[in-house]
Image 1 (cartoon, rainbow over the protein chains, first blue to last red):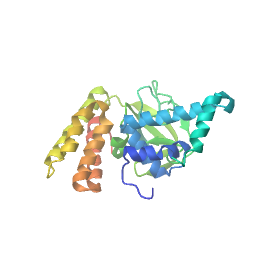
Image 2: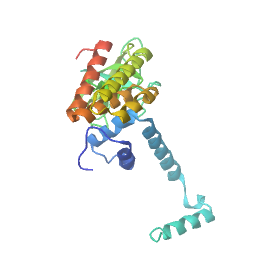
Image 3: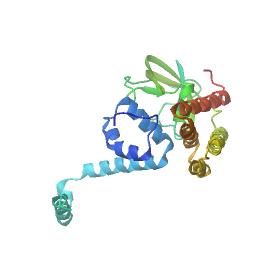
Image 4: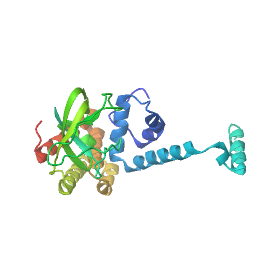
Length: 83
Length: 169
């Protein structure tokens, strides 16, 4: 995103949430992102869901995944581009 | 420099969730952090910034050390909460929310043609609180008259808050 208006919409917040969590937004982008969070309960909820997901998935080891679930995931990824 | 800081109802920072040491019969202890706007540092509001960051509790904060003045905030290397601004209570939050809602409705209905879609969201948004209603009023103003009107509406909200809270500019 090269140019910002003075506020972001929910869709833009969703698109930027990973960059926000990784700390790669510019200061101006972060300001607009946080201004939106300050009034939008839905986006706060989305951000918290992302943080919870990252925290949970980050703790998973390969051996924690049941074989059946791992095979299903691998099959899904193998077919990703074909579908 | 004296500035203002909103905290959540539990006394934590809105975004970092840092637990601020609160004033207790005198100013709280100094908190220090390197200044890097939006990443590190003590973030606070000037009176003109208040509508953008409205939240549950409001404190007067003393800033010191390196201070960076940004367009919508100030960031300092040292800060301490000086006192809670008790006037920012549930009643005033409700009054501010109502003022912003009334203003939003008036703006939406005065547009030609009236902005019915915007008008329809005002009353249902009231339970979400003052920050959302302030944004809605400013966005309607922007819809009608452009980005400078957004800023002007935010300025109007800042004036309302500054007067009611008896803050010095």
